[in-house]
Image (cartoon, rainbow, N blue to C red):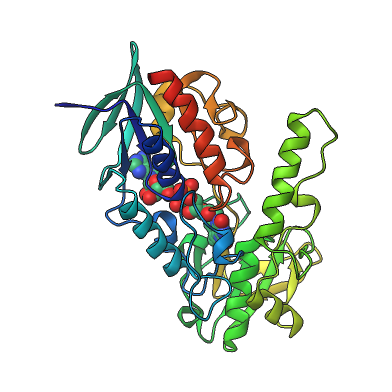
Length: 353
Ligand code: FAD
């Protein structure tokens, strides 16, 4: 049986919910299909100690401020999951769970969505599938010979899993810094933090609020044909959230350049040095989850789909939301996705009415 709706939103994380909020306000008939069985998107799977890099009020989706978490300036992931679950209920968003979408195909004037619970024929699609389920690991020599444990950010939970071990954390971004700090502060893990270039911490008083302002100002400058202000990467790579600051200031973060290869028992550097390791944690980023869009044949540079704002250039009935700045300034953040969701919903309303 083919289900009818004007629009399908694929993915029921924060980006999909923000899209749902705006579609509902505009009176568009839609359904959100989410592959997971419970609300919260990727926030359900992060490590135990993860905290947002902005206070609650600056981590809000459209329409409803995130309430503060008692005792925490920067809420933890469980608070975000609870907020998203409540948001979905409050706005009565039609989310179908356990609905993994396999393919989106052109079907004359429609797009056909093939999910494992059924088929939909729709006038437009918003893809908001995030990045969490597509971790990226770089090709580093020796990865296959290393005898210890290797995991990506997505597999890390807590320092207790590495008690008494020697761990190399790879990656100079926020995940690498936070996981290295988490392990170092535990006191019984020997941590080496390997980064391609020396870690660049943002000033201690800069958090997600300031980053959002900078990203927005940059997008405005580019849109108006003014000089590129450099965006957030011109300021640094790592938000000095309290645990990162604590580990750094206590001298607990042992930073080394990136190693040149893994060996069976550790890692070797270009200068001939070697460090034994029981585990390597690859905090080396993610790629957008776009496999379901393969039949549309839209993938271009760096695996991204070319867009104008959120709209796919090669398929005007498809919008992309939340994957990164290429789909709108700060579109992959809680505070940033609302505006791009609104723009996408308005264009879709105009298309389907
Ligand atoms: P997701 O949360 O990943 O949601 C996508 C949903 O789509 C998931 O439920 C997934 O199961 C589903 N899905 C995927 N494929 C399919 C399919 N084919 N069919 C159906 N469903 C599918 N942002 C902030 O604003 N503040 C922060 O402090 C912050 N910290 C972060 C820390 C880390 C470690 C990471 C990785 C990101 C952080 N972010 C932060 C960025 C961002 O807010 C999160 O990555 C957020 O989860 C992205 O939301 P999303 O809705 O785009 O994707």
